View 1 (spheres, rainbow, N blue to C red):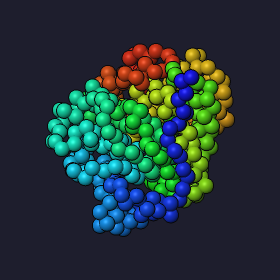
View 2: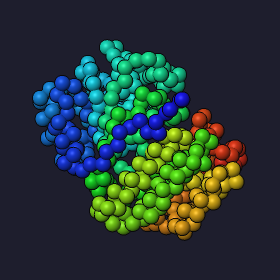
View 3: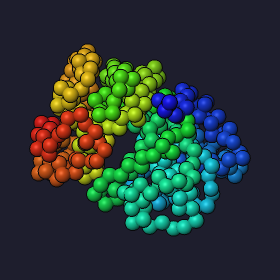
Length: 377
Ligand SMILES: [Fe+2]
């Protein structure tokens, strides 16, 4: 019997004390690499813990984790790690930080002891050279936003430094060993980041529901995720210091992550990539732009679509909920997000990412993508 566990990642809900303990009680016999942006360690009060571990000699630190990491960011991180030979990585931060940690895990021992060029790592990403047998580094992921899902998936998104394509590191070894959820970390998220990451999670759950490889278990998990997010995102934007609401968002994002970890994403994510790459629109907003239109296109070919749309309707319908939830923070329209109308044709050309657009239950043509984009201009 071929048994594949639903989720190979050990998941634990914890709190800030748990985070201090995690850093301070790192197994001293293992060299642990902390991947966490220095900008945020002060906010979370963990800088001293990290510095103590570094002084004791069993911790090292990648302290620069830019948003939307590129091939160059991977090379910089590998340079920073040098010849430390870490045995585990503690990745604390948003999706970009966890994705960078996954890239370090995938490439560190593959390239150990030699300088790698931008061209070489680009080719390795394209050709999935990291799937050749070699040592990966165990990751403990501590997400700081309720959205990405990277902590429970085998994917890491790497953005082309030349803004031509988007790469995905995608392999079984890239699952984190453990995911520690600390809702308190999300208490300081600004409104726009809370919104964009929450919408990313809503897209993960919705797209998992209708993706080609979906199943009943995925659908049930996705429905619960959608309900949690649609109930709690508008509330948490009005009451950002409410830990109960923040915890509910973390639960929703986690379930959404588990759902799309089994299916990968579909048209909404595929359409979003050039919008983010060419115009810097936040990932979650770029994905949510087409969510309503794509849901309607997919309805006919989606098993149990009525259950999905019943949840959307329970919250006033998807389009209205999206506009109301974005409210004063941002207008969820291409033009308002800084995309010129004459840039739409160029965006359309970049929306057909292999493994994402063809993972959509209904084939969508370039003309339809243009229609979708103009409908949300
Ligand atoms: Fe996403």
